[in-house]
Length: 486
View 1 (tube, rainbow, N blue to C red):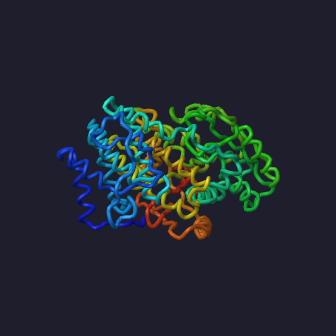
View 2 (view 1 turned 30 degrees about the horizontal axis):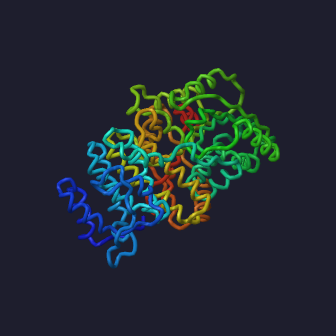
View 3 (view 1 turned 90 degrees about the horizontal axis):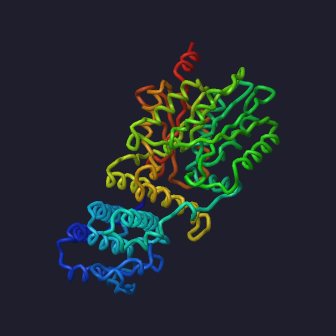
């Protein structure tokens, strides 16, 4: 991540100021904060929502403040990402300790440094600040002065609902999802070669946007004639609880479009919707798959694209629903399971630890947005509103409302092995296709091939400037893998 570093003495002074803010006299606080440079007109919250330290909360403040000589903007004081992270962490600690005075003072400072229209660090801090204010306002009456500002937090009703064409174009803008699509499709094509029927259970965040490319590949690359029958099963969960991106049409209409598209590629296709919920480990889906009639020479494919982490983990429930689901899938003896997700950990019960992990991952989508989305464009507003929703969910929500619960790839791989799955390596074709796709995007995107000592099987990891972003893996039941080796 490109970062602008301040002189260490200035950065250290600011951190010490915030760390020991409670011990300073109110007079010094007012003088110190009054010297902060003015923020842009597009700061996170209007200044009518936040007060200068120690002012009566009913007062409306004057947003005009002096600018330090030699500093043209608020970023000049604390634009470095490390500095901004420390400010956010101090604010979070104040909120968790119910220190309303300290929290209000740090929020006021952050409000002058963060901007939803600034650079990537400022926009990242803007989303975090909004989420912290929302958390504080719902935490204790001590933070009642933030109730008005908290209404600015991102709700699902504020998110854009994409048409199919909009969503397809949106997904193509960045490798974030395309990486997993290409890797998974290559693994699926290799696994279903020779089958007369292919049943895909698509557990995908992007509402089947992977499937048209897979249909094209099946029509062009599978050598069996005629092409196999394609059956697609999708999950319809509560529309109000589905994470972004959101789809603006029903799944029935989406299914009709996919079937029509498959027809143009000479692929016979069936589309089925099953009502099920990630909150209970997709129990309805498993029940239906168990009673599906046996079909001779049919491959069962389970495509898990960034959705399994919405199943509650052990920090929320004593019932290990994630591991239970994987074992239930194993009992169905699928031909292949593809598992793609973001490579970070947001499951910690320690709020400060979770906030730090979130900050050190979420800078990536904000920085990469500068590479492919024009400032002020409608697409960038949609994209960053979706990111802000995720940040708000992880920071401001707790319990069952906090659905964004990513785990590191190492933990998912451990779960897969515990469920008696073995890794399936990606072929040379998959690696070539992923690298070709990455060449279409900004310099900075890369792919590393990750091999674990436990099974010596190659996985793919999408990276941004060397930092892990998304992992892609493929799995098969252990007995199935053993049979292939005989």
